[in-house]
Every structure is written in C-alpha cells, then in structure tokens.
Length: 289
Image 1 (tube, rainbow, N blue to C red):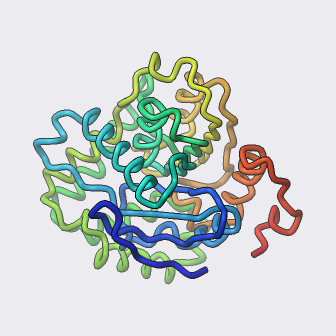
Image 2 (image 1 turned 135 degrees about the vertical axis):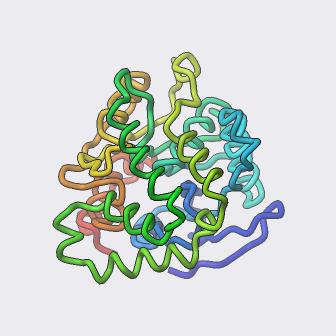
C-alpha cells in the first residue's frame, strides 16, 4: 500500500489514503524509525486511511508533569487529524500510545470515533513486580549499552518460542531500532524518567466514567520482563471502562503486532466491523490482503 510523507501543522506525517475511508491514527511513542507498525499497516489500510507521526519526546523538565505532557500529545493528534481534513478519527494506541489515546477520549470525546488500546499501562494495587522489572531496565540503560537494551526490549516483548526460531529477525529489528529510533539518542536520565512516566496513570477514573467511546482493550498474556504492560494492567483499566470489549492474546507479548500481525488483526476485526457498521469478508478475517 502506497504511503506518502506530508507536512501537517509543521509535523512530518506518514499516511496511506483510501478514498472515502475514515482516518485511523496509529499512536505509539517509539519513533517511525523503529518500523513497528509496518507488519499490520496494510491490513488496517483495507478499511481506513492510516496515519502515523512521531510524537514529540518531552524534555526532562516536562516530565515533572506527565499528565500535561499527554494532554499536549492528545491535542496534537486532534490537530493532525484536522489538518488532514478529518474532524473525527479512530485511534489505535499501543503501549505508551494508550496514554495518549485515553487522554484523547477524556479531553476530546466528540473527535474520537473509536479507540483500540493494545497493551495499556495502568497502576496496579501491587506494583512490586513491575517495579523490579523497571529496575532491570534501569540497570541496562544506566550501563550506557543502549544497543543491548534494544535486544532486551524486543526479547522481552516477543514470545520465547519466536525468539528461539527467529533470532536473525530479532537481530535485524534490534539493529534497526539502534540506528533509527531517536529515543535511544536521548540522555539516559531522560529515557528513564520517560519510562517511569509510562508506568503511571494519567487519566483519573472519574474522567472515564460515562465515557461512551467505542473501545476495544487488547491485552497480551506474556510480560517476560515484568515491567508491564501486562494483562493485569489491561484488566484493571477495563474495570473503569466496563462498556469496552476485551480480548486476550494468549502466548503473545507486547510485540504482538510484529510477531503475529494476523492474530492482532483478527482480534480487531469484529470491533472495527461494528464501529464501521461494515461486515468483514471472511477472507479478510483470516488476515488476507
């Protein structure tokens, strides 16, 4: 599917336009250089005009107020959609992008047509395990070996069997991120402060009460690095969005869209069929192009 780069409100965006189709915004904090959306992009593009842009990495000082940071990023999503001629748009938030999607739902409910939240973070009553997982990651980042951290990031998000069978691909992804993701060029203190912010809650439950945005929460069963996002976090969020659909991806981790894009696509299709009021052909439901 043909993708083009456009300048929209001073931001460089990547998008593939389908005539007459609604806009789907892909939101994740990892930059375009990591190429994480590529395996699933064309599948989603069968139903939507698809857009992605690199969200602004906040400064260390900005991260003293993560709620304000995510509010600003949510407003930026609305501005990009408007710049592409769409007053309403669909959101697909993945890990850190779920914070942005939730803020969009809270702050701009009239603009958000639907929200898919894949691997959301949420604060648990017992955060001891995620805290230890974060400390493992901290040790790697503070060592200065961010190339090794890239391997840890992928290997902790993929199933053990996939890593064992496809280590050549894991190497390619890790090296691709090392060379292309601007996040890894940041100061380690800033990286860690940002990783810490991701493990908070930046939408209060009362802000979600009564929210009627059609929502699908997709959780993954595996969290090998124990720092989240996790299925427990997704379930905790679901308790505050009881109208949302919930889907669990068994035997997959946070990198599900690159390990098994067909499985993620099949999980999303019934939801998108409902929100678009458009039956999904059987061949597409099996992940066909």
